Image (cartoon, rainbow, N blue to C red; front, side, top):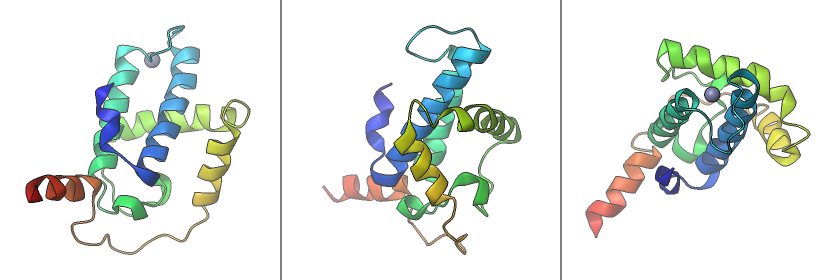
Length: 131
Ligand SMILES: [Zn+2]
């Protein structure tokens, strides 16, 4: 997946966490033994990546289950929930640091309205425009 380089910092870490969860989920639910998730899960990951890139909070992004902005389409949201519920508790052994970091960030207070022009995508395209 060549699109991973678009994200950085907290957003990239979040994407890596989601990727790890999707792998655990895909292996168990889709009998997938490949390193890469199946086509269906890959589509979900690509969607999640786009949502992260466009998240109006950018690097100040809250965890998704606390976010006041509902940016996922209903069926993608349902899939995200399913993946989190299944893979969340199974993250601690293979990915202890990711799992703990995610738990800690869930304890941050819920933010107010997203700041203006703060998404990764906005900042990214603005940098490109300048050059
Ligand atoms: Zn799958």
